[in-house]
Image (cartoon, rainbow, N blue to C red; front, top):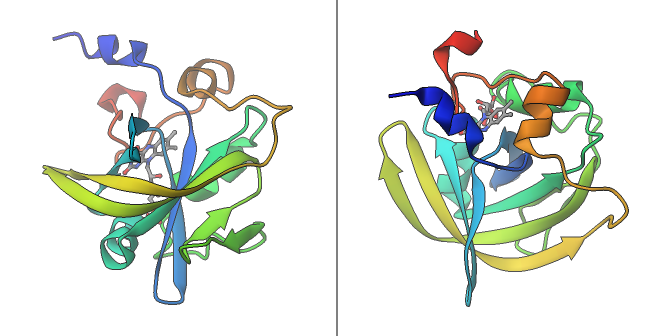
Length: 171
Ligand SMILES: Cc1cc2nc3c(=O)[nH]c(=O)nc-3n(C[C@H](O)[C@H](O)[C@H](O)COP(=O)(O)O)c2cc1C
């Protein structure tokens, strides 16, 4: 099996955020896709070890912030390589409480979706959360979203072990 074939699959780069009561957290994810438009439904694959997994399981809700092409690598690093168990990732980050009470990251975001978990699928290391979209907001139409290929090949970004697309030799 040539695992490099998997690199040819296209994604974007997103912040998935959620809450547990008053506590908030978020993480980077590339594994976001729309399932259907009727009813408008999204899916995201989240590692069971992540604090964000714990929060989505608790609140049954999450937000998806769509990152723009100029998002700094240190912003992606803060949400994608560190855990909310160690730091407050929202420190210094512009965000708001969404209509379904999830935290929504506004910095570097071209828009966001708020989703209520309708179902979930256990996939070994990860859970695929399926969310009904409760709100969708465009914040900036002038700048394009960042793609996963751009992150890898132009920004020279890598993916940590908890990312579904992690391949060992990247280390
Ligand atoms: C480019 C990139 C893509 C990622 N994609 C995913 C993903 O789709 N699913 C996932 O569970 N983790 C993904 N991660 C890893 C999480 O963002 C990372 O494990 C994070 O530290 C979890 O934080 P938390 O413990 O605060 O929830 C990705 C990281 C990066 C940098």
